[in-house]
Amino acid sequence: MGREAYGRQAAGVLLEAARTELAGGRYRAARALAGRHAEQNPGDARPQLTLAEIDRREGDPARQDEALAGYRRALALDPSAAEGWRGLGLVLKRRGDLPGARDALARYLALAPQATDRAMIAAELRALSGGVP
Amino acid sequence: MRHLAAVSLLAVLAGCATTRPAWVPTEEPLQAAGASYSVQAPAGWMRRNVDSKSSEADALVVTRDGTALQKIACSSVEVGKPVGFGTSKRTVEAGMSPAELGELVLDGLRTEGGITDLQAVETAPARLAERDGFHLLTTFRDHGLAKRASLFGVLEGRRLYLLYYVAPERLYFERDRSTFVDVVRSFKLKGAPPAKAPAQVPAA
Image (cartoon, rainbow over the protein chains, first blue to last red):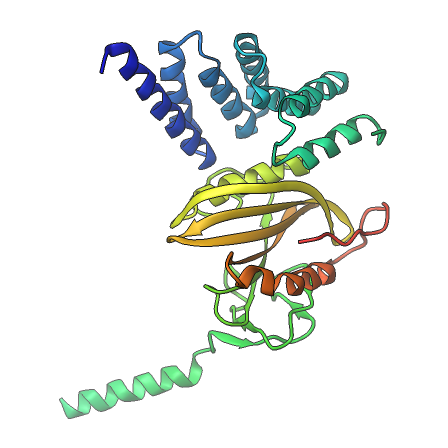
């Protein structure tokens, strides 16, 4: 296996491991794994997205700016990353940017029409629109 | 030696006389010793007998044929504490939306020992105890056995309440699904719900 192919394989493992650490609330470990991948692959949206997810889910208000910037970086690299629009919408909602949140969540639903949380996000969207469907 | 054996036997018998039974028939309505909720337990099921002073006093677990075959459970978690599934350290935060709470619970389930292939089938808003909450439908393998879980949750004040049903996908889940729906309908929190639309009965 060539160096580049090995790098791609290893990157997938790093991100998977970062996601596992994130699910368990082990944010420092998750951040280290995703950060390592981000450094090695600056053009890849996935580690940026994972880092943003870590910042958002950690729930620390001081990290919400980081989360917002992270989602924007990820979406600049890959505007079709549905999860990025979802996360961006949830952060913007928390910050009180309701039009921004509406726009981001609507994009998420448009990009992921089969998402398992479609009903949940649609309900968030309705609430943001004052109950108007 | 004979004396020692007699003493040991006495100790065992004394222990038997004072030990609480692990499982007792469900009474109706059912209210956890330390909890601020009540539910109507299915008749003829068994309830895990929890000491009212234990740390699990606010948790209810009922089953008919054994928890490996079907389990309906209710628990609550204080804001600021881990969600209570697996080894997850992610904590319940005040003001979390139903979408965020559903995500938190799913992450917790992912860290449960013995659970693999966890899939969220659906995450949807739901009403529980006349409050806005969420419903998760998941499938997973529990030590290799395919199972399905239906979970309702609601954040009320400083506590997240969770009510869920877990059973093997094959045969058992469908068999007791309507029983769980009845339990969900009967779930009540102490105190008046916030003024809102009348409760909708969620489908499990």
